[in-house]
Length: 181
Image (cartoon, rainbow, N blue to C red; front, side, top):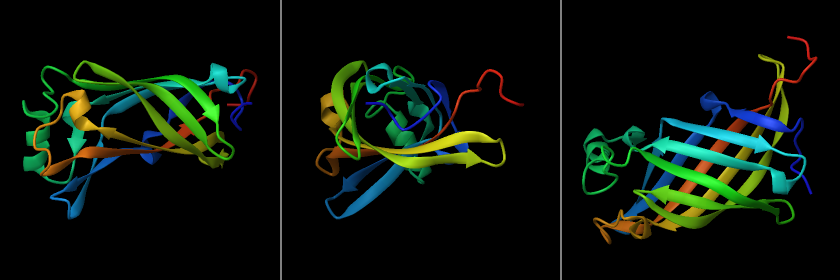
């Protein structure tokens, strides 16, 4: 089975229409949302699911929760240790269809701790964007992790150990040989 996209090749992230976010419960009574504002991805759409995949990197210093004090705390020694561990990475190892959605399995690395996680991946559709006349495709990926398993356990249970990751991504098709520019 293949993804409902063509042409095969390396698709680019449309950073103007992509958000790499997370949420965590605070005191068990509210949810705090945040995002990483600096990230890069290489998305390979293959001829089939087995030849499709993603490599992703987020800069830990780019965490943004809407609160400058909290963001400084998160990049410091008690959480991300951004000076020592400047990146969070994800590298997919498999992609499988589950009917209308997909399971994207890969290795997440935070603070040199690597663990397999699974994203539920939903294809949101595709269309030709009139501004650049290229095909754009949307995906939503969600996963749940325990931050303590990645060496970021400070403050549990005040801030929940469970973190929900949500990525809303828009991809841009690669340039096709022979296409009008």
